[in-house]
Image (cartoon, rainbow, N blue to C red; front, side, top):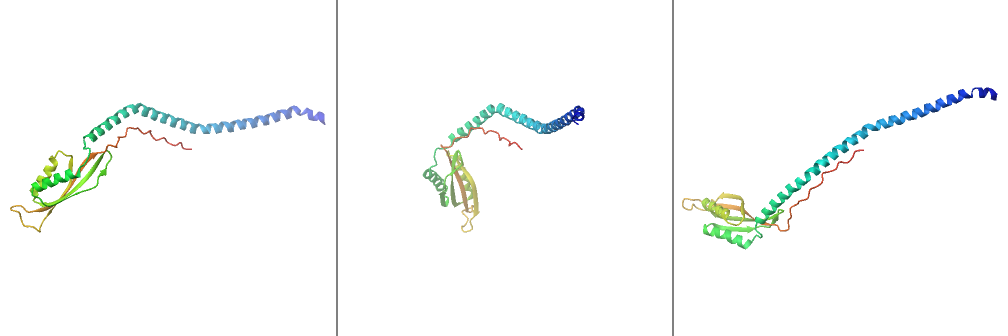
Length: 205
């Protein structure tokens, strides 16, 4: 019996070897397919990294010129800031407005100062002026305010017909309301000079 079994031993060895080789080949093919399936994802990641590297290179190439442009803008803002007055004086402004209206004989004058508003590199303060006079008187008043050496801006003007009074010669009296703004620089404001880094995309799984 053993002699007969030994007679078929070479065939058994050949068949077993063929079986093992087939298993190894199958495993190799599966491994190869899995690696080939990962190739597109790897290629996409390589393409993305190359694009991001190109964007970073472009950003770094431009960063020096961008810094120079930002510095020039900051210097211009700071130069303009220094041209603004260092303070807003209510007594001086109120006296000035009152002097203008008195000289023009504008009646029932009311001048109310508002609160300062912080607008970054400067502060703004508004004065509400009301009075009664002729259109010509208010026109001259606006010219005097505009020509004054102080930095003032007439933000808005509203005029109303006054039916409660008679004509003043050839001119009818009207009521007017003006919003006048005064400015001063903000010594605590420093213009931003930093350059923010570009956003980094999150890698998708």
